[in-house]
Length: 230
Image 1 (cartoon, rainbow, N blue to C red):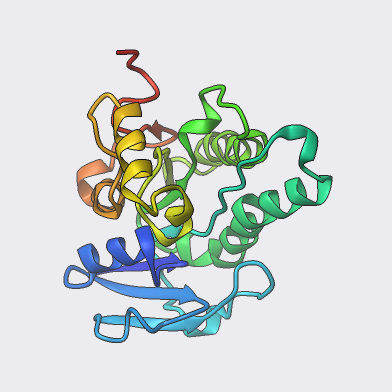
Image 2 (cartoon, rainbow, N blue to C red; image 1 turned 45 degrees about the vertical axis):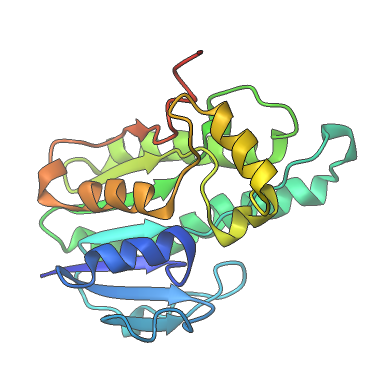
């Protein structure tokens, strides 16, 4: 069985990934909380991506897959965003990701071929008002992922999933009533917003042996929003 490390896998998309993988892989979840994963077949490691150093001694010497889930959604007019907000979004989305990868790089290279999965956003490729901070942070991820994939091929595969709005606790304020849900659904060509399982199934594929010839790619799992104008 593969050893898979999920950073921030205790709720939302990370939790959905853990549920998909728990019976086919050895799952290690590094997160702040564990109340929603207590009944899953996983190993929990207390970890706050914004402030902690990952305790690699609690991990196996070989890691076959890494998924980094922590992120932010700060939507507001550019003129009202302080530089500190940009720094905070960049830190949680990107800088902490870099630190995690560097800390487990020996474990990843110990695998015959490991897979890293990161999360971007449809906002990184589309010009969307009020998205300057999140687009900047996610854009950093996309550029970084391609460069990292080139540097570590064929030993480590690196791919990015770029979703549109997905029903998770992080996005609750955008989907917390039926009017908002209906408007969000109508904005997508497939006439619905995302569910955690939509992203979890793509992550499962990218971690599996079914994707061993795929690296350096940005996958837009977004209901058609980034490519279709209808």
